Length: 206
Image 1 (cartoon, rainbow, N blue to C red):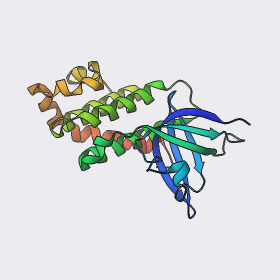
Image 2: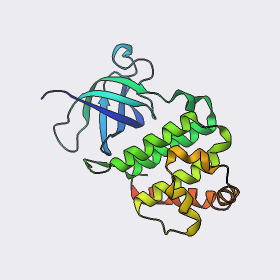
Image 3: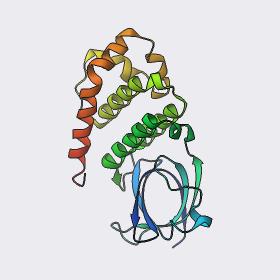
Image 4: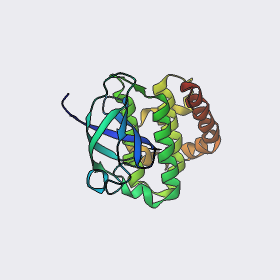
């Protein structure tokens, strides 16, 4: 079987044995795929420089699993974008990992029509990478609403309209509106809790 080259956002990594990693990643069509990276903790040639970190946008060359339930075998990996500015701020890192966790629990192996999920996560990471600390609370509410709306599990209220109409890339412009700031103070905690309960119910392995 020939190797496949494809682009992914890394959602999660898990140590397996002494030197292997299991990598879960989201493809550009929104499919979750799982990979065995043999010797990843020792191989600086194939997987050096922290390439296999959650939040990285990467290119993988891999051999497909022989069965639907098996792991793909990762041969090579290279970073396209590491969103390095996110890693300079603890609050940004914390929320970015929350975003990846959301995607991990709702994405499905073998999906082929969930580009919206890949785009949502990608745009969220791009915004976080260039955002300022004062924009974070508004952006959290913006992301949560977009996420729940795309998942079809939220009842629309009038106050949500500015968030749902605006692209994540334009989230910074929302921060100048006093009504938006009031909405953040009023609804952020409850939306965060709603997302937590949703992803818990969406994946029995949570």
